[in-house]
Structure formats: structure tokens, C-alpha cells
Image (cartoon, rainbow, N blue to C red; front, side, top):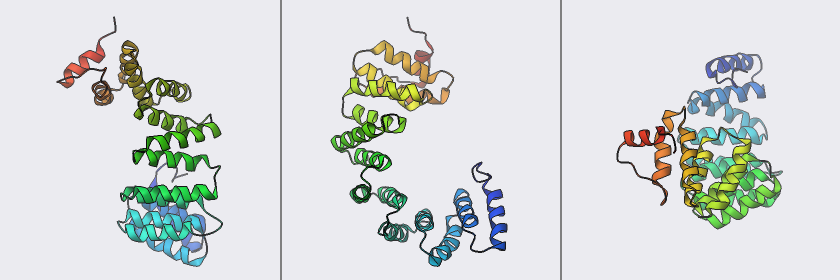
Length: 260
């Protein structure tokens, strides 16, 4: 409960106390490691995880160890650990996902995509892996592949708003604004507080000629959220059918104005 509440110091103390009674307590070890990572103490999390990894074949511990090594700026060691865990059978899919994430952070997008594709070959029905592959393909500027993969994920799990939001983003970036606006409408029906999706849908509406609707949507994004002024102004400025402001005050006045 302390860990879930992000009370990392309390979680660390309780886990340390449990491990004094039983050094091989797996739950205590996992809580301790996550608490240390939550406190940005990845270096301290490595030693107990390494000891636990040596005791037996536990892919979850090994994956967390790989993550901790990368967080501690030992990226090569962390990626090496994650590759070894991903090579185990039966496969532990989170190891592939962690490996892909760390490879992407290291700028190795092609290798990251290959890691997810290898995982999909082992578990072709996994919607989470398809979502990861779609995100990485977008990051790699392969919009056609991203849309194909994310469409397959949407068809397999039509009710997942995270899949729909990523498909909408790929569709928007591909210039299919009408389709993207419709997908975002479905996202917002499930996640009305998804401000980024609401702002992106506003861009789509302006691009298909519904300027008043798009601007009204951006006013709605900004209402009660002054910190979103920059995002709303950027959304307007980034579309050929939008507006550009020379001063933040001008943008604020525009968004405060009620539509005619």
C-alpha cells in the first residue's frame, strides 16, 4: 500500500524490515527494489536484485534488474541482461517490452522494433505488443506500418482507448484528418479528460474546414487549465488553417473570447 501510494521511504523501511527476517522473501525484495527506484536510487537497487537473480530463474526479477542497470547509467549491462532474459523460454513478454524501451531510449529504434517483432512472433495475439510496435513505428516515422499494426490492435480490442488514441495520432500524422477526428471522438467518449486527444481532435477539425468547432474545442481544453495555453496556441499555430500569435497575451485574449 505504501508503494502504491508512492510513499517510497516507508515502503523501503518496511521491505528492509521484512528482509531481515527472511533474506529470500521475494515480495520484500521486489518492494524494496521498486521503492529504491522510486527514490531515484537505482545504484542501491542493483545489488539485492543481482543476488536474487543468481538464486534462481525469475524473469521478473531479471527484467527489473535490467531496468535498474539502465537507470544507473549502465545501459550496456542493462541491455545485455534484458537480452538474456528475453532469450529464455517460455518467453516473458515484459522483458521484450523493457528491452525495446531501453533500446529506443538509446537511439536504437530498429533494434527496438525487432525486439517487439520477435515477441509478437512468440505471442501474435498480444494487443499490448501491437500497441508497442505501433508506437515505435511512429517514432521511426513509418506511418504506414504504424497504422496497419494499430488497426489490427484496434480490431482485436475495439474498446481500448489507449489503442484508439495511438491509432488516431498515426492517422493524424498521416494527414487523414477526417478519419483521425472520428477516432478521437471515440477516444473522448471513453476518456473525456484526455486533454491531449481533445487538442489533437481540434487540429483535425480545423484541417477539415470546421474552424469554429476546432477553436471551440481548444477553448474547452484551456478552460480551467491555464497551463495548457502553450499547447493550445501551438495546436493553432501548427495547422495551415490555424492562427499565429506574436505574444502569449494575444493568445490568451483570443482563447478567453467567447465565439460569436
